[in-house]
Structures are given as structure tokens and as C-alpha cells.
Amino acid sequence: MSIPTAGQAETEQCAQNQVVGDHEVHNPHGKENAMTEPLMVQKSPYPVVVEAGQRYWWCACGRSQTQPFCDGSHQGSGFEPVEYQARKSGTVYFCGCKRTGNKPLCDGTHATL
Ligand code: FES
Ligand code: FES
Image (spheres, rainbow, N blue to C red):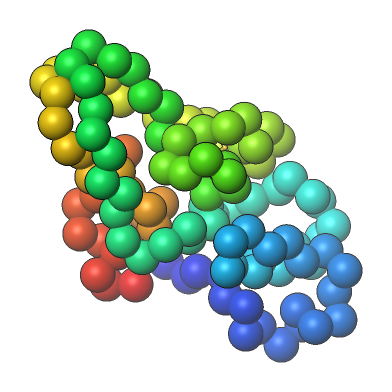
């Protein structure tokens, strides 16, 4: 799986780049919202204290400014948030790299990126 990086050659000339956090994504076709891969927000999980019975909406696209949760910024991106309902209260580790195989929780994939 390839991950967009800030070091790609074309990025300096393109006005369609998008910066989210410290991550820049090249969008050569000018489709502002089109995404083929989620943005990698960070290469580590977000520990969150959850409450039993509460529902949480994990940001799958990486665009949210309220990580690790959705703030609606995914609109038009082709990504949708993933619901998580806590069965018990305690600390949960939500994926921050957006490449987990066990959405929305970290499965260690970030260590391979
Ligand atoms: Fe990323 Fe909603 S903002 S899924
Ligand atoms: Fe994404 Fe761990 S933070 S797999």
C-alpha cells in the first residue's frame, strides 16, 4: 500500500496540495474531495477513555480536526466514519494511521509504515 508523502516531486508546482496536520497530500486531478487513501494523521494510536454504552464515530478519512473522531470533513471523500460502541468503560486505542485492519481500533499496522 502506498502512502502519499510530502516529498513527491510534483508537489512543489501543484496548487491542489492539501495539508492536514504535518502531512501533505498531492491531488493532481484537482478533485478537491477525491481520495483513494486516507490521510495518515499519526503513526500511533489515540488512547481514549470511553464509557460503556456510548457510541463513537471514528474518522476513517484522516481529515477531521477532532481526531480520532469524525467532524464531518469526509464529505465527498468517499470515506465514511466507523461507529464504535463501547461495551465497557475504559481506555481504547483508536487507530491514528488510518490503516488498521481492525477499524476503528489500532492493530499494530502503524509499526510497519
Ligand atoms: Fe474523517 Fe468524517 S471526518 S470520516
Ligand atoms: Fe493505525 Fe496502530 S495507529 S494501526
